[in-house]
Structures are given as structure tokens and as C-alpha cells.
Length: 300
Ligand code: NAD
Image (cartoon, rainbow, N blue to C red; front, side, top):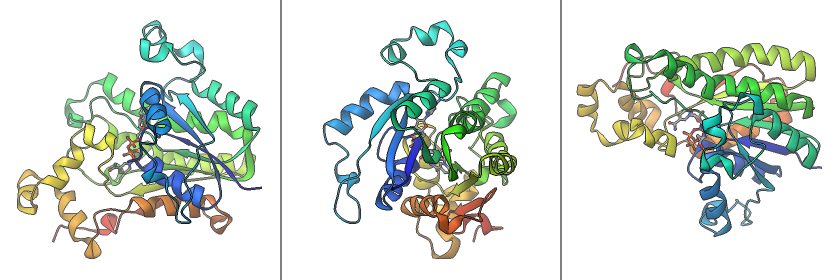
């Protein structure tokens, strides 16, 4: 039978999660999706109304099917963790069983097992603030939504991931180099995610024969990135401007290895490779899919 993938963090057809879903679907995988509760309604409506049909087209001309969309909020592990104001919030009250533990249970009930787990989500409420001005609350929220959310997903899904299975998350070069503008503890959260990739590769590999890798992706004008103004900052400024503002990554993106700005499809394809038996000896790795951005030392 074909493989089954659960992809957490799709709410439209612009982000890396969608691109990964498409590459996995093109390779024959069955696609299950976890969508952030507040974004669920609009995502499902758009899907139903055919708004994404153009971007659902696979290389063979067929349309990607999503077998099921699950509401998910990856900052909550089980119902006991959900505070009253969230429980009664009208964007949450309409959905149920969206904590990580409950979603894993529902997937088990509906499908039994999966082979591939993808974490394509991040959130940092104070991302537009420099680290030096970030509050404890904002920092911990970034870590909770962007790093621990992966630990939690893996922890709860591991019992239903078939041996030989693979997990993939998305990270960013700001974990290891200075990227002004990627604040609020998001750089710290990505550093944690990359370090955890190694430790979890060891633990999940020994325990369940499941591989754990992360893709360090180049910049993309996704909804999340636009929301923080980060991508606009990089794309809209001229090179000179960017230099003036200290946005060094802009130069890098344009100038590394003859660049292409975009690597969305390649991120999807790399995820499909990492999830496949072709990568059966790759685990604990941070794989750069960024047109060479990570290799630059100075903008030229
Ligand atoms: P995106 O907006 O498509 O994806 C982020 C998703 O996370 C959204 O669908 C959002 O609804 C979801 N989300 C936020 N909080 C959540 C929560 N508590 N529970 C469940 N879902 C939640 O944007 P994207 O840029 O494609 O992001 C996907 C991943 O790629 C993220 O990990 C991001 O950090 C990473 N990444 C992005 C870039 C970039 O430039 N866009 C670069 C490198 C890595």
C-alpha cells in the first residue's frame, strides 16, 4: 500500500506545508492535514469551494486529494491544558478534539497508522521585536508553538508511526546566523528545534525505527512570513536599501549561486526524498534547501 502522511500546519496553498503535501501526494502518499483551529473554517470552505483547485494540480494532471482535515492547536497537549478563555472562544468552541493527544487518537481511530509526520508550523507573538526587547512570555510562547510542538507531536504520534517511518520539520538559518528581524525568540526556537532533531532522531530511531530530520528552508512569502512583515522587508527593499537597513539576508538570497528566489517546490521534493527509503540512512540531519544561502559568508 502507499504511505500515509500527516502534515501539521497547512491553512492555505502558499506555505511549505502545502508544497510538501503536493510532493508527497505526487509520490503516491495519502494526505492527512492538521490545521490550526482558528484557520480551520476558512481553509475548509476554500477547499470545498475549489479556491485551491489550481494549486492542487499534480504533475500527472490529477488533483491532490486530502483524505481528512483535523483541527489542531499544537500548543496544547491534552484537554486539561486548555484554559477557559480558549475553550469558550468562539473560534475554538465550534471544533473539538484538537489538542495534540486527541488528534493522534483520532488519526489512530480513523486510519490506524501513518508513515510520515510533517511539522510545518511556527508562531512567535513577539517576532517583530528584537530578542533584547522580547518578554519572557513571548519567548516561551515562541518555543512552545515552534519547538515543543514538534516534541509533543512526535511523542503522541510515535506509537502509530510504522517502523521505517520518517518525520520532518521546517527550520530557518536564523537559528545559527544573525538574521535581524527574526526576533521574539524565534531564532532561539529554531535552534531548539534543530538540536531536538538530533536527540529525537536518536530516541525515536532506537525505540521505533523512525527517522527525524529538519529542512532549513530559504525565505518564502508565506502567510506566516508576511504577517510578521519579514519577507516584505527582504523582498521589497533594493539591495542598497537592504544593506542600509542591515538586512543582510536579502543580499544573500539574491546573490548566492545565481539565484532563484524561490525554493518552495524543492522543499516539497526534499521532504518527499527524506520520507522515502532513498533516505533510509539519513536521520538527525538539518538539510539546507535554500539555494545556498547558508553557505554565504558575506553579501556580494
Ligand atoms: P504558513 O503560514 O504556511 O505555515 C504556518 C502554519 O502554522 C499556519 O498554517 C498556521 O495556521 C500554523 N500554526 C500556527 N500556530 C499553530 C498552532 N499553535 N497549532 C497548529 N498550527 C499552528 O507559513 P510557512 O512559512 O510555510 O511556515 C511553515 C514552516 O516553515 C514553519 O516552521 C516556518 O518557521 C518554516 N520556515 C518558513 C520560512 C519562510 O520564509 N516562510 C523559512 C524557513 C522555515
